Amino acid sequence: MSAAASASAEAASQGGDAEAPAAGGGRKKLLLLAAPVLLGAIGAGLWFSGILPGLIGVGQRAEQQQAAAPVVPGFFELPEILANLNAPGRRPSYMRLKAKLELADARDSEHVRIALPRLQDLFNTYLREVRPEELRGSAGTHRLREELLARAAIAVAPARITDILFVEMLVQ
Image 1 (tube, rainbow, N blue to C red):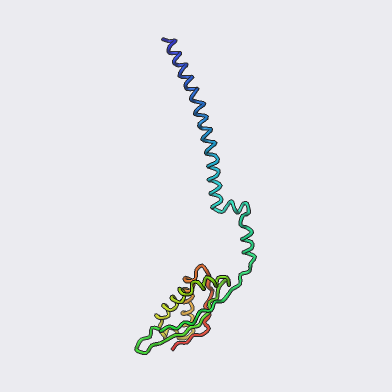
Image 2 (tube, rainbow, N blue to C red; image 1 turned 45 degrees about the vertical axis):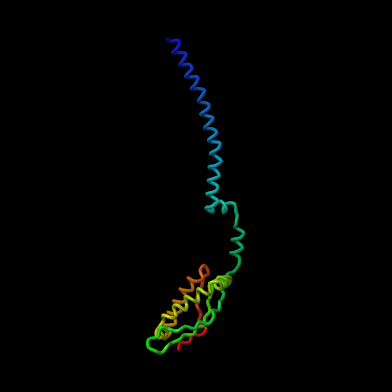
């Protein structure tokens, strides 16, 4: 029996040795397949985070050209706005307003032209709630400018409006 036990022990050790290279070969295959996938994932992460394009210089020429182009402020003339004000009593009160928008960049005038209906709607809606006594004096004009500027910034985003210039303002 001892010879049989030793023979089975030898067979077990040979079978164990036969499986060990197969497991080692499986690990090699897994390593050979996982390494390119892992490197690809790292490369994609670096690319989409913006680190890799910056390292290899992709897109720097376009940024340099944009930085080299001078930013010229521009003006956009709004159509005349005629709105009835929130006047107490029976006599209606009206406001006629001609204004220009000062843009941070003249190239943004196309954004403003596209957003003009929204801009006019926001201005008319606000002006209909203003009382005539709120517009008196320079403080009233300043408040009106600030309110219209805030609404214009919302309406024409991503374009930047730096100021609203009143060309004509008539309250009756």
